[in-house]
Image 1 (cartoon, one colour):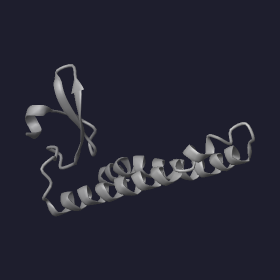
Image 2: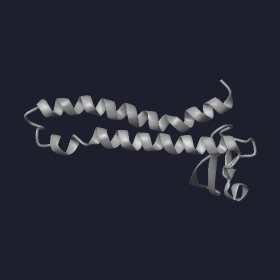
Image 3: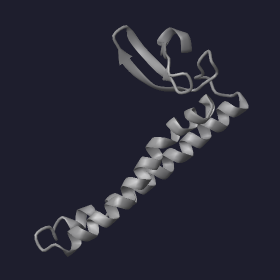
Image 4: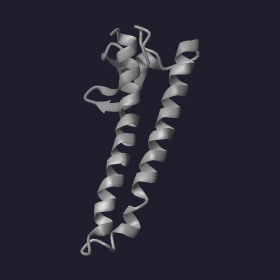
Length: 112
């Protein structure tokens, strides 16, 4: 696979993780429902899979929108290699962002 495919996989991985986690939580919550000891927790925990699925779906929409803008050349947060930049992080030498295509760290002054 090329680096553009890996960039898309890195961007979609958290959303797929949330969707898979919400499916697993559904099965775990059914076990809680049938347990006499944890029956009181069920009322609060029954919404966790739905919330996880909603957040995962929203994350996928935002990722798709970012990739669509990048594909059209409208994105402003692009590395010198052409890949999209990840979230801003605080580092030893100031704020930086990691390129999702080449995995380099890009300093704050290079993307603004």
